[in-house]
Image (cartoon, rainbow, N blue to C red; front, side):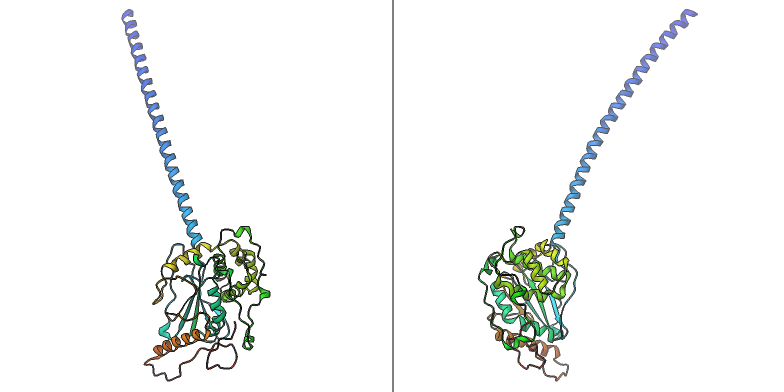
Length: 364
């Protein structure tokens, strides 16, 4: 009996060893497969993480690009709309235009007898400066005195073909006796003719930086936009080939009455430069006015939906054109109403006496 028990015990131990070895082998195989799976999941996780990071960076870059292309507040139409109340000028408000978005045109108010004057101007273009020298004072007077019946929309652009054009600026017309109504920005409020280019301004066209300055004013101090526009054109005869530096633009804006550190930082940081490029490109593709397909040169002036094609420095011709459009719009708006009141005429002088005929000699 003892021999048989001993034999059975030996067999049992042998089987247990084999079983233990098999179990150990299975455990090693299970651990190996688990380790392989872990490595696979680590690789997959790392790949997914990389994809997410790249996607996140891409979205962040896109958001940054779109943010850089976002327009200034109060210029959703790519221009700033100015109206008067009899004594001063104010700007219509609007939310900033998102980057890549389509501009929102201002409503057509001609049915209400309102005439909109829209001007595309380039601050590096002598023709734009010449137009404003001849007609800017009258436009300001019409806007202020009409109390909303005449509006002005300023659309600054920077066209490639105008680069360097400001090396031969037009002469400044001599003031006349009627220029005493409201003082014009003088040479003392503008930079001196000697310009030392700032290395930080390199690579940026002056017209682009000047348009950016107007956009900065529109965003932070919109009420001063027309004064800054006047100062930029008044200063054009004073600068050299490089135009004004950013620091000089800040000084010019301050001297025009806009003293705001946010505007200064916006100008030196070229905050709306990308928007200027976008707005200029949009204008050369399509201009949302009847009879005007696209902007090919500046200044482009549209009055009540009609393009002015006369001599840009002929103030009388421009006044006649504006009066003709104004009369037609007013008459159409009041047709059938029984209104027998004589059609009002916007005057071009800033005097206290009524002027039956607008003149071209007033200044802002």
